[in-house]
Amino acid sequence: MAKSKPVVHLHSYGIFTTWDAESKKLPNIKEFTLDIPAEIDIEFGFTVNIKKAKGEKVRYCIYHPNITDDDGEVLEPFDGYVYVRNNDWDFYLGDTIWAPISNKVGPWRMTLEMNNSIIADKTFNVFNHDEGQFWKRRGC
Image (cartoon, rainbow, N blue to C red; front, side):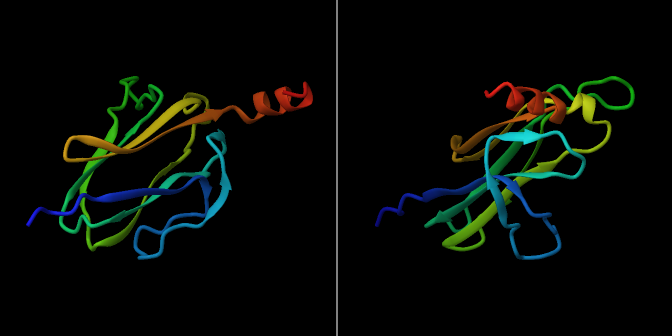
């Protein structure tokens, strides 16, 4: 009998409440958006629900906008693997902004892959908060 094809649903994306990695609870969505103000400790990302894929290996990856370390070297994308724990599994992929803010501005792409295919993909625009206020005053 052929194995069922996994069903992936992007549940929410944007700004979330603080995520506790030790808890089984996922963070709650605060605002659906792809535009993220560059503020220390702001939590952003997306949640997905994956059905019919128990035991499958999922690769996550966060591509940062050429953020450098203390030595000036560009950080590699943050990636790793997780296994789908059950046949109705919720997963959160996200990140936060840390000091200094100045080098965190730009596009942050987050992806999930299963069986060498992208199953979820969002690019967040992290912007300098002052720049956003400027454009809001202009009516854009």
